[in-house]
Image (cartoon, rainbow over all chains, first blue to last red):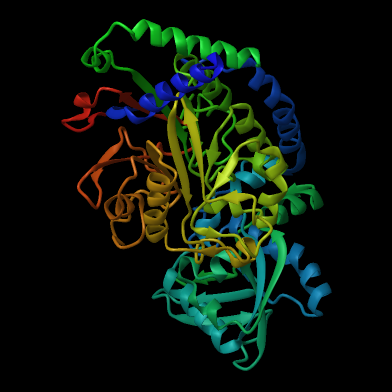
Length: 251
Length: 305
């Protein structure tokens, strides 16, 4: 027998016997915490560094100055920071919407819970926008009949929260009953279509804002709320935010 | 003959000579042990840097460079190691917003990940955004229940992958969560979600019977368990409804399991379910020990967690 052939056969026999004979006898599971007891691998640190520096330089470049510190808990039914967000969405999104459709946005409605951070006094940067709006939600606009807008008002009246909005004024009495509502200083016309801007999360029923389901159209502006804020910060020099009379109740 | 082949054959023949004088019983008692280590992460969500010392919840935890050191040490100890990720690689820090996932994939490639499955957030820049980053990933994406036939990911994502480590064959298949209601259709486009339980039953049969795998691992982004919706497919429902799966590595629900859960499968055998929370705060590690001596597994597999 050829020696090479013989060696081939015995190798095969050995391999087969090994393969057939392995049995799972024991399993051990654990989790290992990644903490500062581990030293970072230097190749990884060196690789990440230029990415980190670019991101941080960009995030920390000063875009505007805030004269005060604002939080979403500063007012009962409307707050300075909420008004700023809704107004910024109106101001920055309307040109996009108007170019595409020829119409103007009448109302902006966001949600109180969507303000994810305070806005601190001092330098305002892109990082501020990431803190206030860490999510990727984008501006969408839908056409709502006046009757559906009335449902929206009812929602706000019952919610008793400072959900940010723009383009509308609502007055309630001390029992949270509706005294007056105006859209751009006009009473609501049941048959008119109002263009309402919001974010995709709320449009899809988030925060139980089910009235958006009655919208007759959907315009996706491909404009993230965060980018609205960043663009707004770039546009203005100083943020001097105010609560106002857009949503109030009488005592 | 190549030098490498020659060396192998020489070793084989001398091994036979060494065994020549031994009886059959002594052959089986000089048993061979093998160890396969499975390392896993899930829902890292673009967390590349460690949390800072002032973070309220995760101070000084996490960090890819530290994970690299840890993985390197474990691989030195046991080269027969697989590193897997159960999805939601994307979204959570500005690194994703600035680079679209490029850095995440490059670092995972440097870490030598062997496979990852696709989480719902991996569609956050759309299926096109995911596709655009694939050239940066030197590891495979596996998903058995997303049908990508009518998308640009077609042929780029495989249902499963098999590995041979020290002669042990390991089959890993991927599962993803239902996208409707979770991700807008504009982002996932024509991706079709298939029933994960049925697919898992099919996959485990293929890997066990057709591929002859010694170990079958499911890499899942279904979520650990839905207490208020017990019929929703999850890692626990999957464990109970299937057989021949040894380990389910989960994600999506950001569940911090201090140790793997042991669940009974459809034929009463143990299956491990594990998930390590999120943000790269922990590395999961499961060691599988094999022995050529059948008597050592006669009383079933010992599980130490």
